[in-house]
Image (cartoon, rainbow, N blue to C red; front, side, top):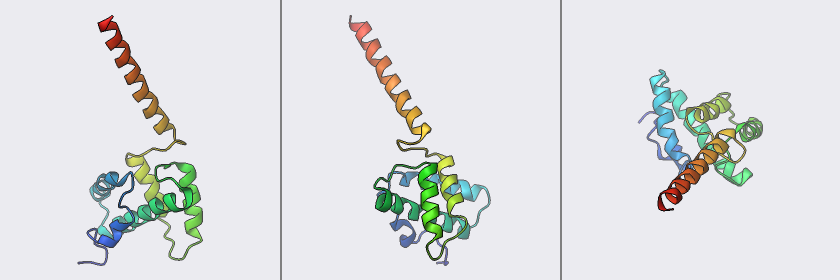
Length: 131
């Protein structure tokens, strides 16, 4: 097993139970399709795991993924030993790859409004067909 194995249980421990855990596999596939080797992919997944853990520990919410929490995390992480400059990039790329969630993000609000709109239309159609 290489030093940068994506099968390492330690790598995935920080992501267990995270709301967006299912997005990581697609993110890894995207990185590999773009030609990234295991080493940068490993570091990207590890950085995202740190971010997921930080969201819960320091922010109190593991779904509030948006620019403000990314900036706060990277500001905090830069002060810690072992900071890697790709940390912010990895998290932003994950967000761009398919998650834009959390009450503070416009993507989350658009999805919530679209869902509500669909529900309202469905109820209106149902009422019209019975009435």
